[in-house]
Length: 498
Image (cartoon, rainbow, N blue to C red; front, side, top):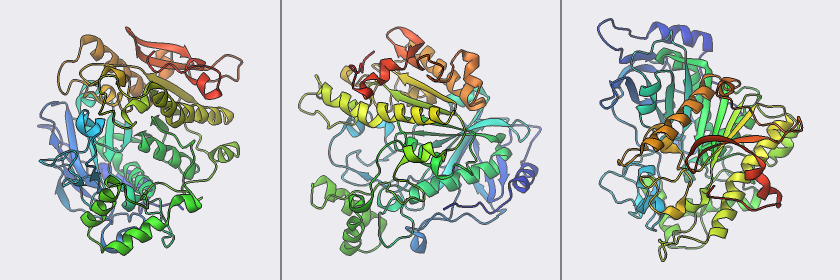
């Protein structure tokens, strides 16, 4: 199933460009798109950046549109001030302690005055949430044709990187999650609504980004964790109509087993719908309280196989060539599972069982990345990989966490010194990582070659390589892929703290 944006791409580019409001006496903060005209603001901390914090890309998914595929917006010339970030899509703040709500809360959604472990729906979330935000160099115009990174989801982006480079645009977006994004209902025609939200956001960006100074032919879909899985899902689901020039998959890939049939727990939706009516906060809190109290049946709402958007066997599809032919950058951190395993509240000094952490890191991150690289190599697709191994006291509350899940986000987004304490070496690592990612955004196929980073391939008889950032006192180095992947083949020990 494919969603088609309402407007032809050529017409969009001409009209949107013609409505860009350039000014001779200062930066242009007003941009026209096919779905409205938006006035943004100049970033107060980074004056070289302008930002548009709230631009809807779909009709609000409320009322009769709840649990329906996203609906494209109609053409409009209405003017809007894009000064405030939109609410995140409905999410529950568990009452159970975790590293995310007790120690590394900068990665969490903003909660306002609400506790990070409130045991209630976040007050900063709402059902009308399908919007995106855009950061550009302050004087970018439609003539600049800058590369674009579309990040799914937003949440920890800082303007410092755009301010530093002046060579790229970043877009972040919201999409539906949990029961609203993946209802798993036998009575619905489409259950992977969150993926369809992402697709429509990509269509909107493709149709309108040149008005902001972007290049629609150089959009990299860039994602982290579940977002990385989603991006790779798009890679397969829309392989013949992609709209993207490349993928940057951070700690997530489609090479895993998705729920299907009885395992999809379609009875969960029936259970929830029988319990109460329609208010979004009641639905979100019912599911959240149910999980916090460990009631039965367990309620899970997650991507599930429908063989339209999410498929049963990705290796089989790749072997048939049903995968997009664009380059990909695949990355992981060296100790992913340390921040995802059960919170070791009884022994925060020593941390969780290392064997269990390593097993989760391999099963959920390293080996899916290894498998993704293999199927891409089978299709002769350009693929780069890196591993981040940094461990900094201003970002890592406990030394045993190492390079935990999400640890490389503040390095690339430029928020690594948000709470202070960053070292000169940390700044050097962060800026090096930013330079490498920017090279990929500028030219996904060949940009990294200018930095002596060659795509991985073992077909020539030479072992594939991976770039590793910040191991010990080394900023960046090239390592043999087998140093990371050998444990996936059952032939060695995995080193989570290189």
